[in-house]
Length: 421
Ligand code: SF4
Image (tube, rainbow, N blue to C red):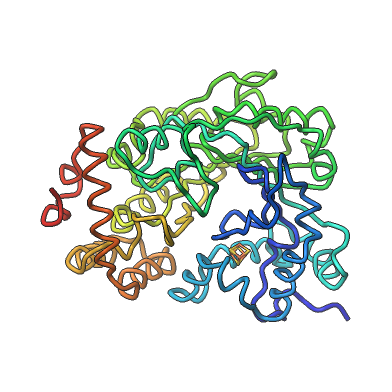
């Protein structure tokens, strides 16, 4: 009798059905993982997906999910572990498990096959979802909490203001601030044959030629119609970069599409943290995305020291959009909890007085229907201990960037005045 997914003590489908081709051309199991040991796999050029799949490291990692956990997942799955510490039902892991719910799951037709696959020796692969992180860190924005490996503009600013571009968690950016490597799309043919979800991320996803080459490959192979295309974008530009044109020309080739629009605030505050974006332009593009065929839109946010007290404003605005156009807009997602070195924009950098204000805001304004999400945020604010050193480092970082950009934190976030300047 095959064991059911829910019978495993601490299971996650990602290491079994998902693979991420990382910026550094070293595959990993999941985009949420921290401290992925790229150095184990590193060599000159690209590491193949099956090389990582068949490595002893991956075998041991997968085994932990069948045996209730272990030292590798304790370290690498830090974000999910932390989320679940503060909320028993909300984490990336739960979201991925939900997709295989036998009744309502998006990938319910694959649940039985996954349960059977788990019980094999995994020497064959069963990749259903593939995230392509192009080897190109170009991004036109420099969000404070981003990494130089994900934004050439942030890397350039770091260099100008004397901030290190060393990012152990995500591959180093040393002298060159813009990294742009060629990638051979023929290497992905095997995986593209089986995936039902192709996820493209960035840098700025829509401004990377490699992402258009990946879509071209899926179209040429005749497999794009079996795929959901998931694009994460800052929604500030829509260049014609592919041989078929811009994103509006590509989406019709796919089964359906989900546009993940990255925002941290609803309105002008977003321009500050996701510098130098313009809110009107983002919403203008969102409106255009909403007209694409078979397309849904998800607003996705990180949980940072600056945004955590304002995320309910996104929830309220998105609820209004869903009421107007329920087939297009879906619930917003408080995606990644910003945590772990070298991040400084973390909840642990928020002083007590500001936490009290944010908790009060959430209690007073967060919509009741999102109680689980906002209780999780309140738990972060209550339980995650204040780290004075991190707070000081964050305030130094804010001050340096404000000076360089000609912005001022406290114009938009007056609650930080006692700690600023
Ligand atoms: S538990 Fe979380 S971090 Fe670990 S593989 Fe699953 S989704 Fe990724």
